[in-house]
Image 1 (cartoon, one colour):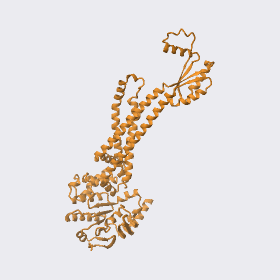
Image 2 (tube, each protein chain N blue to C red):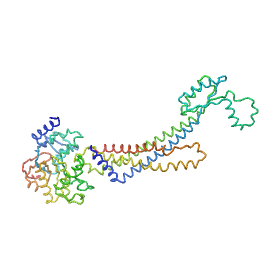
Image 3 (tube, one colour):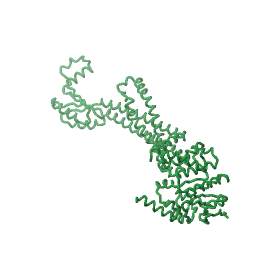
Image 4 (cartoon, rainbow over the protein chains, first blue to last red):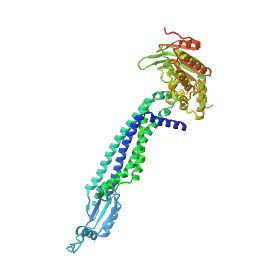
Length: 299
Length: 247
């Protein structure tokens, strides 16, 4: 195929978009709506995951040691814990530091004269932060088997809830997006089928003149891909324009939750959303048109 | 000698012995059981001008469709330019058709393109280089007698002019064979004559021309080979023949 022929078929594809304006607009509108929803879901899911991840950073497991375990042994256990893949960080608190923190938090450093010695003696501990809360159970099982560890404190409810919600949101979103993409492929396929029926005469003449399969089919495939690209571009522009406003208004409406609601920036969202949305748009355009062309054009 | 060259020479020899077109005992029965052609054998030599006549349903259009591989025969073999057309692969059918020019009673022009574009369309299909295309299209439009009508759209043309554009489109790729399915069917007698004379000129320039027609006057006046079909069989095949009545 010559480059000239490639551009000729591309131009015919562009012209095809204007030939069936109503069907083209319907297809673009549907794909735009689907991909707008996809963009919204993606933004929500990514932000949710980001917030969950931030929250996961605060979920920790605390371990206390048997009586008589000296500091050297405690540090040795600490090294073993650090080496675990589930662990992102550990923090050692001595019994004195624990008592200081307790006094400050609950007695505001008053009324402590009744405690001549440290009542939290033997409560030196490691606070262990996880890389992924879903791995908490395996870490806890291991910690409970380590010699010298008396007690492991953790909240399975928090960890399970966070990883569970994360999964549910991801699966539900994926399901919804798949259904929407299926609808888009069907609509593009219909637009191309109408385009083929409108141009039946032209296709017949092409065949009689000796046009190759590529020459006959390519304009329709380009048309589908262009519809997909335009259908992807519109929601991307809209999401780009409204994302910052939505984030700002969420922060303004819930100022008390600012520490929890740590949103991703537009750039962080678009780093993946832009190529993925364009890819999906062009991809469904290609799939919808190629399947229709194969079905309706026996050339 | 390359293998391609060898094949070409063998094909040329085959054409010399059997004709540019050879229908060898061809039968075509449609899926509804309608027998369009029944054991038809016909040879057409390079450079011939042949009228194919017969009443409606005689099998004329089926014969033409077999030649450009729109349909396949149920029995027998259709040879065109040394190719067994039934054995051409899908990919080769397109290239094979570039050897044929086809024109129809209803012209089949693209209404949304002007005269120039309708003709250039055929050149683009065969990927003619741009400078060659810009030379060929005006040349062929001039040959068919439409030098000043490049920018006109089909709806702005008379029936005769439309058929000339269709002929130009069929000829611009310099086919070896021109198939015309009732080319004068929609035209008045004077314009019909002009078109037939144009086809004769094209034939004199070396193109093999096959014309399906019902026009008795034209057939009788032209004194060309006439093949008459009746109910799917050839009932007459005469050099300098005449139109044979249905009854």
